[in-house]
Image 1 (tube, rainbow, N blue to C red):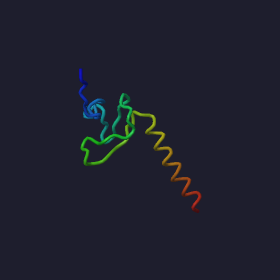
Image 2 (cartoon, rainbow, N blue to C red):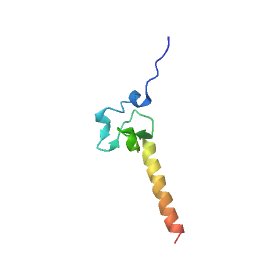
Image 3 (cartoon, rainbow, N blue to C red):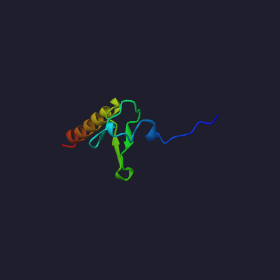
Image 4 (cartoon, one colour):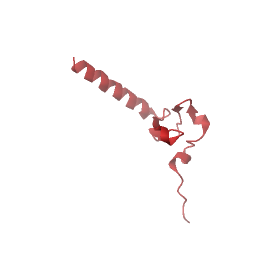
Length: 72
């Protein structure tokens, strides 16, 4: 019996409007950190239902603050 491979965006209800809060994607069941927007030509966004998204944001802020502190 052969399994059909679905698009990964459909596996986690990516297109479900309940998972979108305006421009923000929030789905705790979706393990992806970076997901395509509803219109893929518009780019990518973070899955704010995944804790690693917040870790990524904090790391980026720390890097920016660190560079600005050391470049003075």
